[in-house]
Length: 285
Image (cartoon, rainbow, N blue to C red; front, side):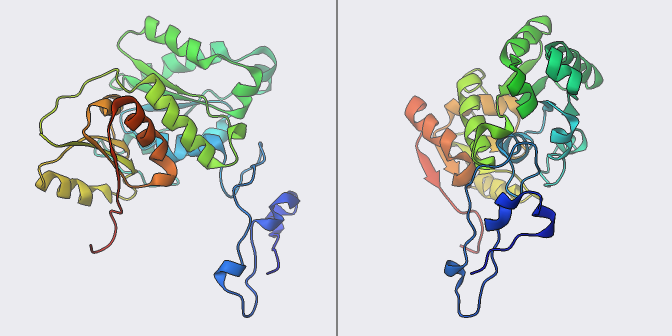
């Protein structure tokens, strides 16, 4: 089972154990690369960083939201449009990406004023959108910008908007899964319980860990509808910001991807007594 270092990774020899070549007579169980290792801040990792896991995997599928990254433009660009998280509002969250565009001078002198200007500009550019998520990156975390305080100030300045902050710098976890955990816990701490959607059924669920990649969620939504089940919120594919603030009202959490979203299900069970049901929505049965 020889490890294999790709030519593109020669400048980062730590990646040498991330890929293997299966030898003759070996099974797949004998040829396993090392995983769940710390990513290297400042590089594009094969497995993604914690920021990537928070913004790209879980945050971006939320459809009626301005997803603003407080950091260099490269972080934003590398988490834009590489997965097809479809939505029924003309894929707003796929068409646009937002960055505060931090540069060297901001690292030296601070970027809080820059972030405020970006928030104002983004809401002005899209007056029909009143919700925003701000994602922390390595650069803004290292200089200590207080994004939560800025969000509170901007919500006072613009009372009709609501802003969620995910402090998810790339170095904040061993890999992108660290970002999954961060955004799960941040969402339930900051936003769950702050809004109440209308209940229209005796059977109400949160559909969790479903991201509507290429529209696959529509099949399950049809099943739920025919069973008389109200899907209160989808965490987060084609999900609305306010719907996800109402997750505490559901009777059951139906969990599709435990690797990315079991954290919020577990917390909803502890805090609100909502049980968790793990399913696999794929396959004939």
